[in-house]
Length: 148
Ligand SMILES: Nc1ncnc2c1ncn2[C@@H]1O[C@H](COP(=O)(O)OP(=O)(O)O)[C@@H](O)[C@H]1O
Ligand SMILES: [Mg+2]
Image 1 (tube, rainbow, N blue to C red):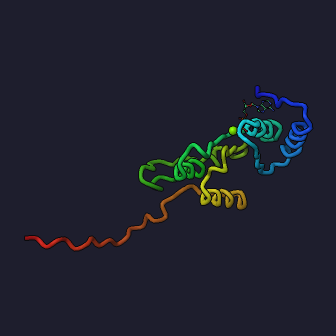
Image 2 (spheres, rainbow, N blue to C red; image 1 turned 90 degrees about the horizontal axis):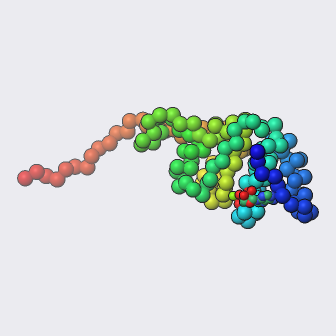
Image 3 (cartoon, helix red, strand yellow; image 1 turned 180 degrees about the vertical axis):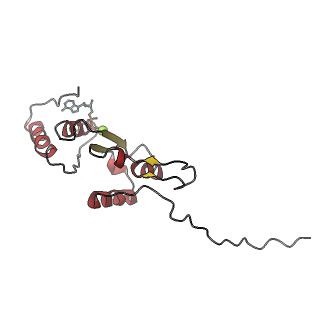
């Protein structure tokens, strides 16, 4: 069972009302506030009150991974997308499909990656990383030093 949201103040009552209202809508939600104020707790309650309850709740800490790793974590990849990508990996967007993807510390995500995320939110589509530069490329090695 999840923790209850404790508090009787006007502010916390407003938060509870918002959770009730928003959780039914399927909208994407940005939760702001200082560390420890209960953002993750609010995200869990949004999920628990929504029709998505029972589907995956996937949390990704955007501050914990370097940018390129975070991108492959979110988008997934196909074999050969980059050196070391031997097999297909499903991204969190796919794993969380039908459920909730909680992007913790989203403000720490690089701006280029934030713009890719925006594109996913707007288009409701994403594409796993692939190697678009995989075609053979002519390469002429520089002329060697004259042999003696
Ligand atoms: N209103 C609240 N009622 C009950 N527990 C709370 C409340 N606000 C915060 N907490 C608890 O405080 C801790 C930090 O909350 P968390 O949701 O992780 O904060 P944030 O994500 O904003 O840093 C957690 O253990 C959480 O359950
Ligand atoms: Mg937190």
